[in-house]
Image 1 (cartoon, rainbow, N blue to C red):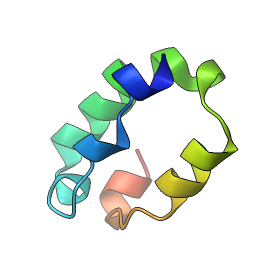
Image 2: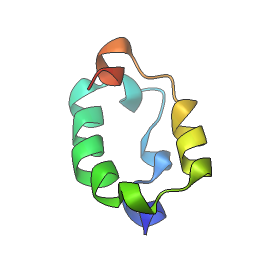
Image 3: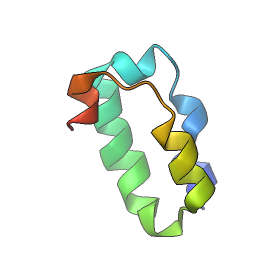
Image 4: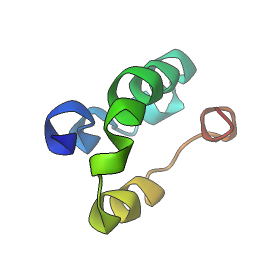
Length: 57
């Protein structure tokens, strides 16, 4: 379920710097499936190079 909705493939070097994109991704794709994610997903997410503004969302 999480892989279908909160795909990390959506997060590229460009998109992680785009605040509106990150905000929408978090609210519409990530939060609804948060309880279905696993440790590997969290590890991969932690390796994304978010900007300071995107990180603080």
